[in-house]
Length: 480
Image 1 (tube, rainbow, N blue to C red):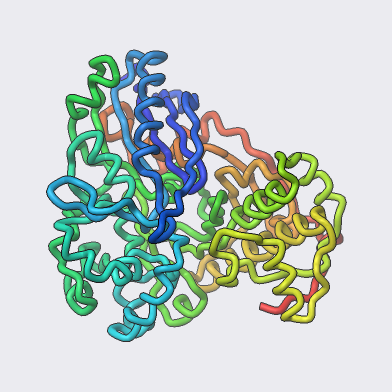
Image 2: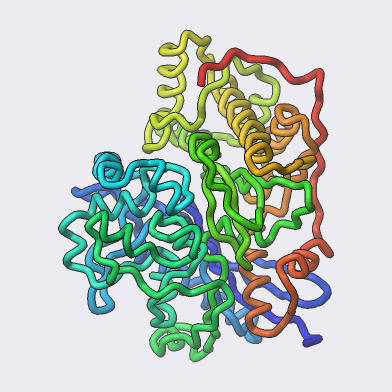
């Protein structure tokens, strides 16, 4: 096919979403964001939830803009964050999906580990222990599971409302803790051991599956315009990695609310050392393995900014804060993955409490606090990448930072300094790129394996280079 193909990528992040129109052809990929919207959770009497109905409204609004500005649009696919889901019965939600930061999950961890010890669980699912993995959330649901006949992960829920399909796309299903890391199928024996009916697990759907057209009422919302809905790497990190031009000695950090730092491998690493180091083996596009560690990410800085804005009663000058942080010094480093930082709230107060508990000098003022957060994130990224290389027996010479974190020049430079490796920053919209590339291949617009698709990104890729500054790096006292 010589004419470029035009598709819509719906990309839902944990703090914002966007509808992106992509033009994909042999000459490369062009993106245009036609609609952005915030993703704000809602606290109800029973806990913290996602406003998925509001998100769907924004998606349809964005698609209306997309078909109006690009009438030749032919395809649509959805990606989102992982682990969260809606319980369904007869095609309807039983309840609004819980947010993974809700505290209900913590008590369920002991319940699951009482049935399957952590080492045995890792051997089955290959996942880093995170208290909000779907397997723990399901345990927290308890008797509510009996009201459901299936569950739909967030991107599959949105796809169901657009197209009617019921299924679980594989890359997102791989984050649930209920997918067998060796066979790639649902681990029904594990579900039975934990008291879950395997009947609630929907059929698995690989990336690159054509699901069909839009439901009639959605077409009507779009003025009669139909789109072919397909699956992509519906875990946003799976799409982000697919949209990153990785060399043989490259590592990646997909950096936004979370910092997903690791390597792309052909097969999982299931050693006890990998488990104890907190590494996960998640599904990627074309059967690749995303061997990575979930670092807390820029959530720490954004939640700090929200705290300061509440204190001031007005918006904060974020660019000015980063400029001041660039001139400040960090008095300490802290463990960004400490569980105290998971829940929403006053992150600066928690950093000061961490310092007091560990006998470290606490940051004074907002610039020092921001610098401390960014230095600690950079240290976590550097440590994670080097540990991933050791565990996988790989050599790493370069780190690619993609996503919103690629715009944070201070973080990128500090990651180069602390890792001693070259850092390439960009593309910012790697997730939308990966989404669009897989769509275009599914619809026949381009062909080839994942590396061939990435070459289309490389044709127009403009990245910022950061080299480590050995004399700049300081050794700060840290207690992890």
